[in-house]
Amino acid sequence: MRDFWGGMTMILMIGSGIHAVRDSMNMHWISVFGMICFINGFFDSLRAVDHVVNNQTGIVSDKLGWQYNVASVTLVCIPFVTFLGATCSYAMYKDTQAHMAPYLGFDAAAMEAGGAASSAAVDYSTFEAQAQSEAGATFKPFTGTGHRL
Image (cartoon, rainbow, N blue to C red; front, top):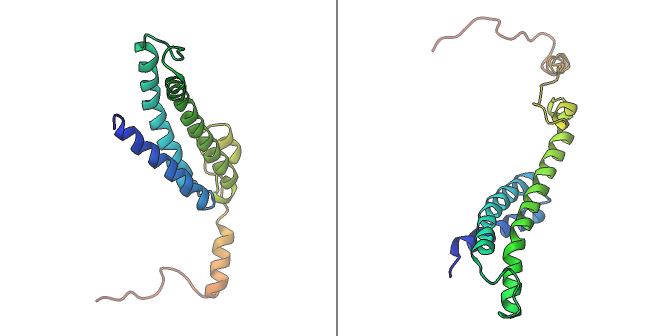
């Protein structure tokens, strides 16, 4: 019961990762997983540094038994694994944005280069022509007499 909040964030991290996989790799849940991994990795790295610096016996010790060694190595490895999860989710986010950019009207090359997503010149005349053909050629917006209540 010494690390209650660490256990709770670990449960949230694992739960969001499982939910992301079960929800067809939904980018929302992958982003939530990545953010929780980053936050948890930050706090676990502080804990690992504290363990390494303030421990007189070292990370691995012949005197304290294999349980101590496994717990100590796990404590040091957890930040690396959680930062790896955050890095992978960020890479998936960037990949999704790069593949969705042409559909959203953004310049994909600028997004992949890490620059700001500049809005490409989207030709809205095709949308207007399609809307006019569906509504009828006689429709003119904002014309006609007004009505008062």
